[in-house]
Length: 177
Image (cartoon, rainbow, N blue to C red):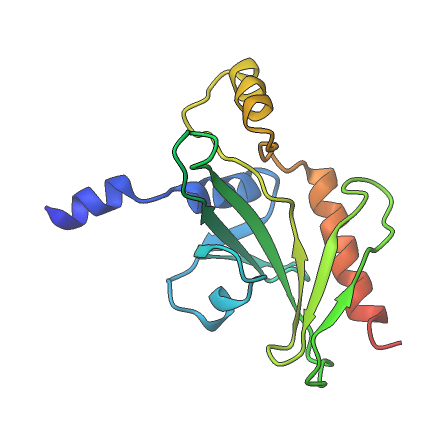
């Protein structure tokens, strides 16, 4: 009974992101919790778990939730970030590497990219966003986002995903130059 209640109350944002990746044509599957890649993030937030993506230079998506305490609903907001992990076997230094931006045609126009040499991967960060699963109307969603000042994660389009993959391929081909 407790397990059923816990399953009902858990945050299902990772499920929704996985479903959407499948919808845009990716072979995406949620993986069991506790993988070492789950701990690769930028310091803020708690991982909801990994999504494995097959046949892509982006191997995993780590969905991170950050809750900020406060009195009002806006102050006690919950934010999410998708961290896309790109394994790179050629990384061998002990330093933390950072690339400010990568120019790729199409959306997104600017992304933050970090290198984690000890883990042998690059991460591509999405912006922080709110996820309102109960907001079925796009007008309601825009209103909630404008009140909170934080964008909602609009469904990732195929064009956006292709841009992320272009960035990942560029990193794998040119990062050591």
